[in-house]
Length: 138
View 1 (cartoon, rainbow, N blue to C red):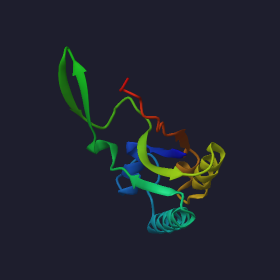
View 2 (view 1 turned 120 degrees about the vertical axis):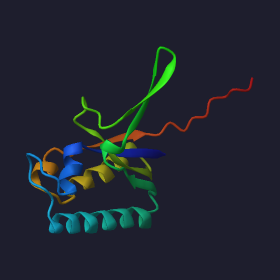
View 3 (view 1 turned 30 degrees about the horizontal axis):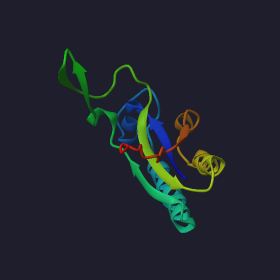
């Protein structure tokens, strides 16, 4: 069965990674190197086990566009979402034997290095992918 592992961040997190001033310390070159090394190893191990289907990181929320129907008309607004503290930052789709195994994989993300203020707020969601195809015939 396939599962989606979702990770989250905030515009402030993306700003910190880009070296923009914020109330929290920015990322250092060592932070990025450790993150990159962890992710490369994490993804390689998933690929070698045959469990990795796909993974992607997403651009900063400021590059988001939201399309919402208002009075019957699609309205486009630019990000970031002022009301949202956390937004989707990236995902993995894994194919494995059980929900517990997908949860074990997601739990390994807690080992990802980074500044303490980022690590202490980090979390991942694990959701089964509904692969049931509705029967529209008959």
